[in-house]
Length: 166
Image 1: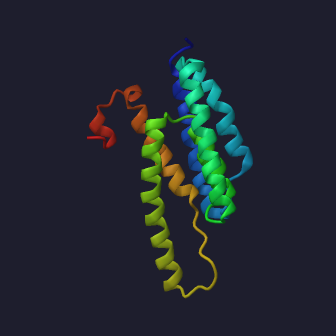
Image 2: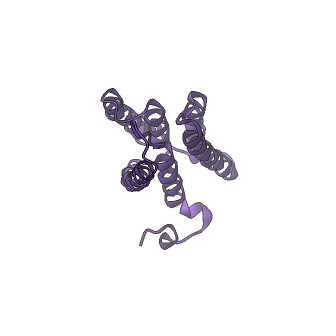
């Protein structure tokens, strides 16, 4: 297995990429393809550095990403989710184990609901017309950062309750 510190570098890179996604989504309501492609492309390096076996570990990650894409593509087709959000969450599914990913989706939904409510209140207070555009990449990034921290708290030598897990 490669040097343990390489995982720190990969996880730090993912955290930075999530922050970039959130900032660009706030500024331009867009998450760049190069960013989501980079996140997805770095996942196999993380699998290798973590010593994951193809069966069942990597197969689970690939299956989770495929299911995530299929479900979110349907939401994109219904125009309830942006394409960048679909790609970002699918790429993130390659990094987060299935159990943690389900928790990520719950946390993302709560953050996204609060974000939507705050933006709707602001939209109404300013008496703006037209459709409300929610930078949902912010909710995805926040939940992704939470899940990374919670899933990998052992790397930081933290107890379970430090990640808000009980």
